[in-house]
Length: 361
Image (tube, rainbow, N blue to C red; front, side, top):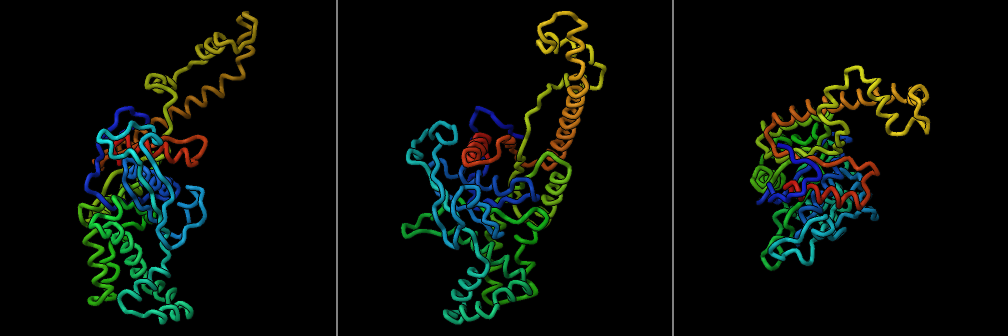
């Protein structure tokens, strides 16, 4: 069942025990925005989350209005329930709020870090960088690149500090689009032909143990449109077949219905006279109360208004059909409103509040 925007009641979170949230979606669905909002929502009650970007687009920096992120973890936001329009946690644990940290993974730096860790190359790694080995290696063996990217996220999800506690309560990965997500996450298959033993093989095995565990959930972002929904349905099937844990469906940019169900059902009838009368009663016919004068004034408005009503009714029906398609997946579904003014930092916090209210975090 879909959770709809604006619900006042606050739900318990649906993803207790999940530490790695992988967010994917068709291009144009607002995947990065939803991932950032989820990271804020997960941090709101005194928690620390890490938001990871793997595609090198610096989308996180743009959303939060900060300089381009380097290849290091750094704090980019603080958040409290009050900032999300929510009451404080009942146990008082969130009095000081939480933090969102971010990391933009640089494939080249990650590979050099990996080579130094497992092969102790040190300065030799820098030499490989200069002669273009890193680009060569990740081009001829893209599976290695995916192991590095997913491995970094899995390591962060399980990392512990000196006190033995987890460094991050949750890690959110802004992952590749739905069409590539299964191949990206299924690193065992990708590196099988490259290495059957050795550090790369061991790393892939360790990554898959995390990705296929109850600590991971792959969430799919979509719109109530035919192509994004179809890609979501296909992505779900591929993830399920690969044995990867599917989380929830996050429906973004949901527009509120302007017409109620009865109005949508009646839009195909001939309502010119009714609409003309209503416009006249609303005063759009000017000060004159003569029927012929009023009708002359409102006549130019009738066709555009009725056409808009028909278009709106068609959109409502299409969205209803797309919701039915998503319900067939039997996954927790959350709906985020379309922000007409665009998504600035305030809008990002508003979306995080919606996710929190609906139980996604």
